[in-house]
Image (cartoon, rainbow, N blue to C red; front, side, top):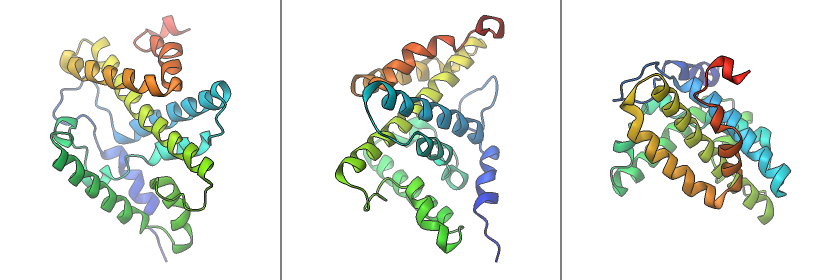
Length: 205
């Protein structure tokens, strides 16, 4: 029997992000998810090394790789629409959940439970209370990585002379500033690594 999961997920490269906004260089979903995976791994590693956590950085990276897989079905809904009001936000979350369940169904039966642990934060029944707390905190760091990736895109567009992302940059910086108050890993990443974004290749050497 043939299963469609990986062929389907590979179509992330055809989903363009930042709908309704003028881009100097289009960004597809595969590119974004790779960035989120690397940043999430870094945030979790910072948490483990500097703040005494015992999270799984490798799992955080894999969650980052798949975190927007539902958009293969839903497309990339513009943020102003997705968060227009509470009802739309709630409805969209349900649509995302249905889309993710559909994608999981493309796997062989014996693999589904393992991938559910990646896709869904509520797949923690077998964990201790401490492990569950670490798992949920790790997933919050993946969400922060998603926002950091968005900020990087805004910086790249601004550096290219495209002011279309100006307000998105301001709002994303505010969100990350709030996150950094509760997650020191975010603050550290912003201090240690963000200043290099927007530099030329020669300046990075």
